[in-house]
Image (cartoon, rainbow, N blue to C red):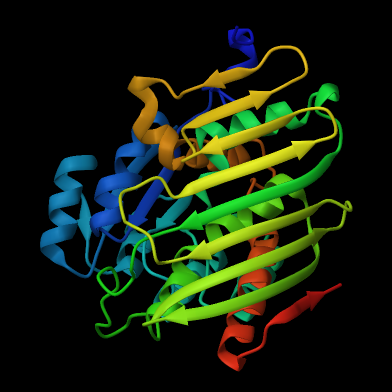
Length: 351
């Protein structure tokens, strides 16, 4: 028998309110923008003023589709001519995105950008320092935090019956990166191992922090098979809970590669692919799937992440997944990547 519907309310306290739409500029008209981010604007309180991309054809195409045809090929011109409150920077991590984010915040704009926020922990710290100095918001789209199953897991874990978290288990395994990453000019990735570690592992490093708390100690065992990355990570959280992460790029693309188990003192939850959640209790168990007409924005979490960004602006507060918070995720990534590069296994982070 399922729990009452209000327990699984998908609004997650981010219901539409009587806010003036946030005046938005958008930089980057690539495939991910078209596929995931721009369509999700339709469930947010944004007024999209213009789209900017160096590729004029792409900029015009996306502008015609999403914002009445207003486009630019120079973001600085867009900053000068448009009345903006915030900007989404949908570019790959690198020098250009770092520079644009800093310039935007120094102009008084709030910023929303994809994960990972930067190429390194040091760069993430730099953005956090600029955000603090300018008083602006920089939110990182760790969209998995806002996915259906993760939002429900947070509610389950807040129940007195769940008790204290004792263990978290995370599996995030993908197909080969040889066929996914292009090493064209400007790519932030040095090789396939770097690509997997920087592009994908921050998702579950971030979810481990978000669901289980800050990490006190981390140990790594790493192996490589023909340029692919295989990693077993053990975690001790500040709360005393322990955890594991299984991270590798030896599976198959377009299959279910998210699996999370959260064990409390009295209950536990199992998340599959960020869509489905199983809640095991002493009394009645609950198995909940996502709603058919919400799967696109629920699966990625992009829409709810952007609604949180709007809410933070209108409520004058820092958003969930702000840059100061997400820099701590990049610290975990950096510890793993440095250990891999140096050929070190065992304890790689201790606080």
